[in-house]
Length: 389
Image 1 (cartoon, rainbow, N blue to C red):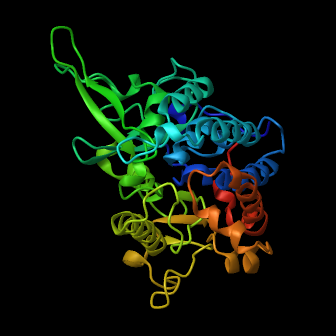
Image 2 (image 1 turned 90 degrees about the vertical axis):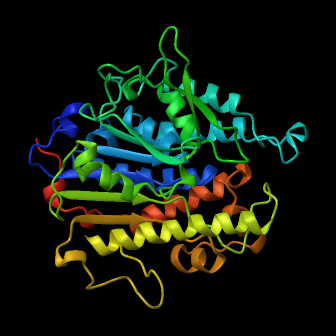
């Protein structure tokens, strides 16, 4: 093997070497599309580093961030799993968890049983694996939303993080002791689809236990966790402290396919409130992409809108703060045909925007593979970000 495999602490270390971040969006079962792109990414970077079967994306990336379904994949990658094995796990999870049931109808009950998801996650990560476990061989950041305090909770495994270890004089449970399966389950607890995940925050003998109620991280502004991951890596309060700059930070962001806004999920009542919430999530996604393109140099920059274009020539502060690569695709019939050469009927395209349709997973996986084949280019990864020997 032509490179040194680093430990979690070495990945986090601010040692003056370039750093690499991978960020994975939420989007329900559309995460299988992400895995299609990741397969090409793993192949491209593995070939670049010797082509050995032992190459893993956790060797290359110093921080892997995920929201919701992206959290499921991010945690598996950080544990050293190959993309092919994660894909098999993901297909099994989709078929086993997202089963329609007449007994779970009605507005007051979640559509799916979180117990099935919990058992699947425990089986993948191990019931006793925690956020601080040494099995996590690189940096990991999971975006959750604590509903009872109305605040996003980015939970990471940075050993220098303020809340990672014990707090002197306080009974707060250290982040390092949170079960990994539970952190991921919290990030995937999409309202209406799954019940919230209750996590112990403060616990001590003779005192009342404080439990937080957590829902899907996609309910925060960070369903696309790329901006949160960049802030985690560079803002002083998070105690990672990597230097910014286009030669210092490479951020690779993967979507789950941008849903067609004319399609309303069939699993949710098609009310104005639901449509407004989905539109707000779409607005947050566009804002995250706009800010990152504004702050970066990006060979994959897309057209934000007809007024802004792709922000070519506009750089915040006139100096790029990172190198940014974004891979995604609109799940519209014309886009799939024009960009990927995939000719689908309207009836085949419409379900692709759903988050909970296992029957769409084979097509979504193929779309992800085509996105990888057409858009992932090794030339976009500068040599200075290659792993040192």
